[in-house]
Image 1 (cartoon, rainbow over the protein chains, first blue to last red):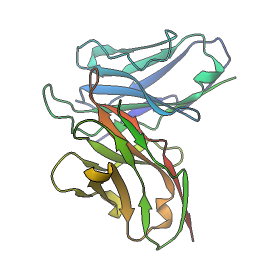
Image 2: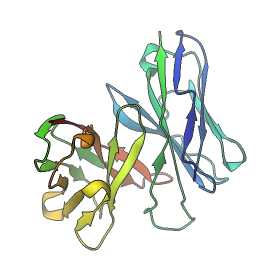
Image 3: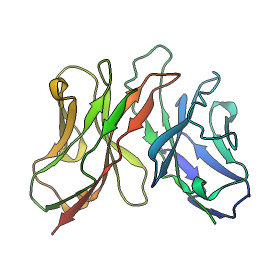
Length: 118
Length: 115
């Protein structure tokens, strides 16, 4: 079946502009993660959604970053007033995590969105 | 806090040679460990994972990894490397702090294969 998809694949923006990154998870996957991959920081967790529960936002680097997940499916990561240090590849992953189940479910990653802030 | 160390940033091997990529973890309890591969312009693909049981884990594309608790290691191996294995490899451990199964990644090892 279809994997995780992300759009756009590339985004170039000017410093100070807002950007929205989209993630379509695998159908039926209840859990959705956002990660950021940058030269200076490597791969780092940003935010986690599980079903209708409140998201875990502990990895968001600043209040300029926010994310939502509508209808338990598609997710949008928004970065307001972008800065040059926001330049990175933003990866989305989804997994089938049943409540109370073991943490053994594979996270399936999308191809990422490469964000360049000029 | 949990952490993962991949001491080799770059490794170059000849096609057909054996490969071992090192991974060391720091985690208080029994770790849940993963190896992912990332080809240029691609997302991360799972190679294999370890949760419990047999400490030698078989994965896709002929890769295997061995969990050694005494050494806090989870090294990735392949007996004969193919040119198509050139990619970046990431070791990761699950973190249970907060919600979900967040992955903490190592810094990655870039593999170059010489023909």
